[in-house]
Image 1: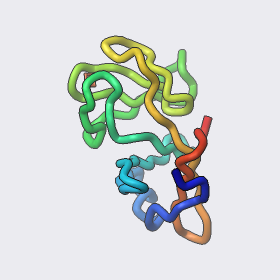
Image 2 (image 1 turned 90 degrees about the vertical axis):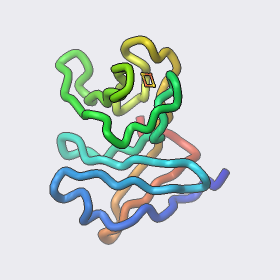
Image 3 (image 1 turned 60 degrees about the horizontal axis):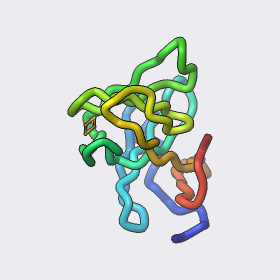
Length: 114
Ligand code: FES
């Protein structure tokens, strides 16, 4: 696995609260800006492999880092740690380090952003 920062596209795509979906080293990675913070997670629910491309992002007073909700069966994951917060998922979502450099998004698959 590559341990370096890898380009993930233009940061301009996130200006309007959108998201960037990118394939890096064979993994589908979603990058979002949630409440001002960049977050990157694998675009695959740990329950049954559903894409999280249509997933809702929610604030949650009990989970200040924000929550991503799988559109298929409703499992909820912490956007910062990836922890599975509600069934039917029990395994954490993979979270990656992400940063913005000179207008470009970069992710690092070797470690988490938590
Ligand atoms: S596939 Fe995501 S909760 Fe079932």
